Image (cartoon, rainbow, N blue to C red; front, side):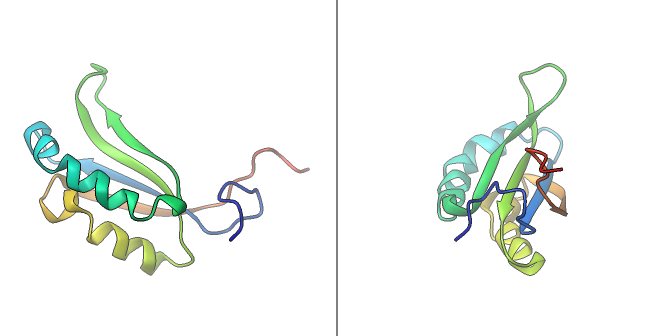
Length: 105
């Protein structure tokens, strides 16, 4: 498998997920299952983590950059996430991404 962050990789996907309003209790309840699920694909995760409201305290979503061959694989990964199954997230987007850094001119 190619290194996940190589500039010539066309298989990176940015997944941006937005929480439902007042999701903090849901996040606490389902967080361990969500993290365990993410760990099942740890070799495909380039980066991942929560996003925050401007107060720098309240989590309000998540971002994953993952390496899958197809959009369908990413959609299947997202659909089976415990945060999706338990309605922590209200919506998400999936965007194909090509890493261009460091710039190769």
